Image (cartoon, rainbow, N blue to C red; front, side):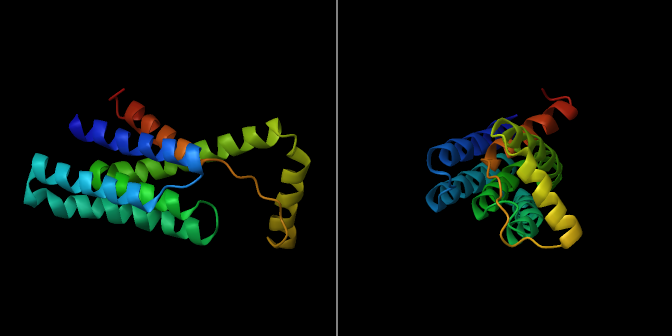
Length: 161
């Protein structure tokens, strides 16, 4: 239960930082990692550290291609890595997949609410048919909220919530 609370706390800290500054600051990332390492060692001892590192690596590895494709920002990658350190690789992978679903839903709602549905269709045509991404007007959302919702969905699907 303590790891669920810690992982949730890391994500909430990321959401707050993102909403306030549109970033996940390096100092907060390092703080979350330090807390994650201390918690891992306190709860599971040194023997649990390799699995924690696997969780951190999973968060980094899953989000790196998304950062390189400009789908999410580097702050989202750092948040998932810190989260993965505490949550573990399996929860990190599940949360990543669910967060992409939530992000898509939030993005679609944002497009509709901003009245940019025509621009979305035009962008999709440009990407799919013309295969060109240059010059597109992209919609930005605070993706950390989608990550938090992915985590909460993961907990619901596991029967924890």
